[in-house]
Image (cartoon, rainbow, N blue to C red; front, side, top):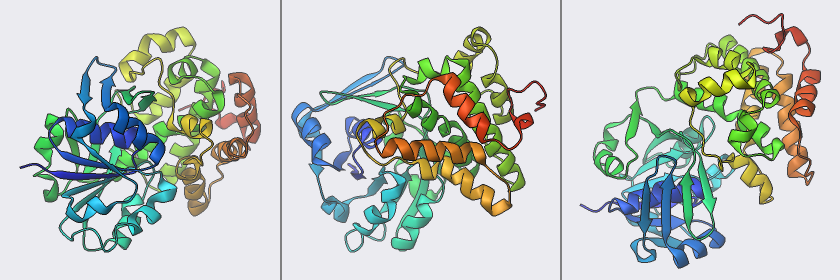
Length: 351
């Protein structure tokens, strides 16, 4: 059986995942902006990864569209738009999608699946997370730049699609409760604004201690708020989130000895937020650091570090092209804190 798949939100993530499914034999339609659709229609797809894998998909092996008319016959719909576009995208499916169609949200942030379910109550709507970064290069080249797979909320409706994802080299990691994974991914994604403000590739940025200290501040604050809210994030790396905060603050030489065991990063990979700023698009900061700020308000805890990151990205979205050095950004985030003793890089801090 050939599955019909509609990818709603044909950006780097959507094209990589949908392209891998097309390479595995699925009938895939990409729905997105003309700029990217014209590129892949003319060049086809070359899908590479940091492990050396490579797939080529000819232009005739997939379809492209600017409207989701293909949803009417789709067996599976992947929603890969930015979180701010979730409701608008789901509304495009109303009156088009069949009740038995599976809709899988592969988006950052918490609660996108809930938004979709409210708009498409008759469909099987499931949350998912793409646990890797994708770098877009000209000529229809999309490169998986970090380790990771696809994590999804488990449901019997996924059984028939599991072999397809496995053939595509993207086996589904099925979780009875995906929320701990989503919160853990959000913790990792708190580096997105730091990377975007640095203007550097991820590996270069993470190789500098002061940028890592910035991330440690943001993550430590987030973990404190999650603890107050009785949220326990999953462990996505060899280290627990708490130990990861401590590792981030060690000297560069020591970090370089252990970082490879924790996360693999391609030298050219950048955060999606850095790409958004480069293209003049709104970012997902409200669904990353902003999510921590909102949670802090709910549980009555201040979140000055993440609030400062929201502010700085907002300034960048309005056209400020400043590239923050590690020392300058660290000083800015430390000044935002009410109590410097909470800084995980401070000598008095105890994890």
